Image (tube, rainbow, N blue to C red; front, side, top):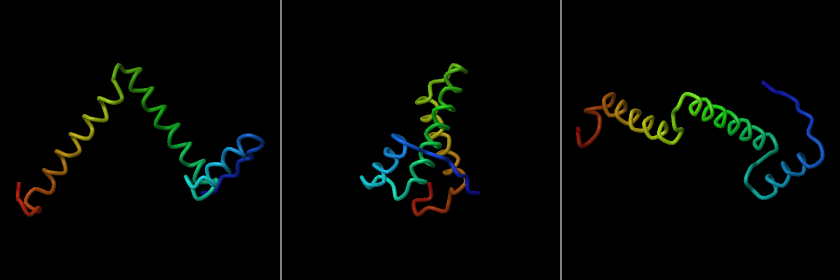
Length: 81
């Protein structure tokens, strides 16, 4: 789905600067990444409001995901853990 957004002045200059520096291929890519970062920030704030540290949550998520992957694919690896 496409969405049109009017960006002027300093904001447009900022987008163009990021593209020119080679960080992004297009203005759209800069905007998409900005939205992803905003979502991440909102989720981290929600965790804080619930008394959870976002960094601790990320570590627990990694460990849990890793354990689930090992269980799911046990026997499929060369070392057969």
